[in-house]
Image (cartoon, rainbow, N blue to C red; front, side, top):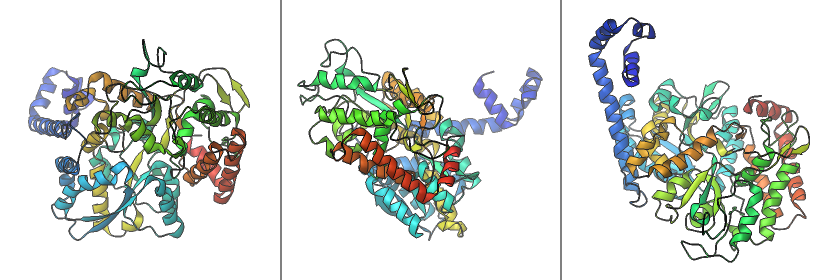
Length: 548
């Protein structure tokens, strides 16, 4: 029996015991359930048709998507909403949505996706648009002052400790999990992510982790680097920078550079992830889930030899003039979208959506020569428990931010009509089909569902198989890596990250005498934050976030 038929029969009411009764009984069951199977087949075919249609909007290689494209995708994906909401059911409801305007994506896409939803349901949405560098401060101000002025928020899992723990979120209704097919998420994004005290609050719309993107045309026989293949360890990148000095980029004719770090780290806390990419390889020991703090004391590890080495790596490249001019003013967005996709630099670490942008953004010139893998590793790893280096290769992909989600706030909890409307809007954005489009096209998001890894769907959209296997494989290999560096969902995590950015920039600019002094300044600032929040409660929550 084909697997698909077996699964349809089980959904129609067959049990495994029925399967063992023989062909005669199964034939009778199949005949009795012909109507059900027919409906299921038609439903599955309709969903496949929608997925095929949206992947042709606008089509890979046909330019960047527009607002008209986003609205078409939103309209085609309304089927799940119509199954739960009557036309005009939310007439008179007004909702406020807070999210990012990063790279003209995020909220801009949400507007387009939700315009058909507004037209169908009768609800109206007003928008609070924030630059990524302003996001943390705006959210923390709302939390501290108790002035939450939004009903729906685009938010990452690290902020769940700041919001869910304070009763600021509304618990997800059961029908929402069914509508969005939550079981389709990759395993690392399932509970406890999105939950607090056993309650679910999050609709996942992203699967953030940092991956490594590099120029394949810089390596191999006759290449400008003279190297056979791209370096796999952080210790080897200074040699790449030296090899490229004075060379020109084969695509643009501009000066060639090696790995490019975003030296304008101050990005509302999000810039700290890029130092983490280096530090994780040195600091995340395979036998220790902790790498940011000591789990028993919350003493920062950010100034141990591993983290200090990561800071030293960057300082050495700055001193060697290995970066493009004025790199100290390049934030992560500029580094990825203006520099790397525009043809400047050999490699970088970034969230996975650099991959989809490489092939579908008007600004990209590297789509035919870009390759992907998990983040570089290190030739040695620091054992924080033993207080000593171990001379062995170590890889630790950075699960940076654990992905964006859509959350509904407790502002709507007492108004059932408004509450259903808010969750319906959120569910539309987090639907299974619409998520495939956001994974394949510029959106600010990367693949995060098991169904996103069906290579044939990407091929039908216009991606070639080799590119898809490389790009999607880098995401899967990171999600499933046994030594992945998981960040904690604890209160104040972005306070830690933001102050670390401030001190790191001082160190890069020479205001501290050494990498160690820079690391010590970060650690001292982290100790103050821990004491302000409460050390004992932070220890408890940190251990819980690490599964300890």
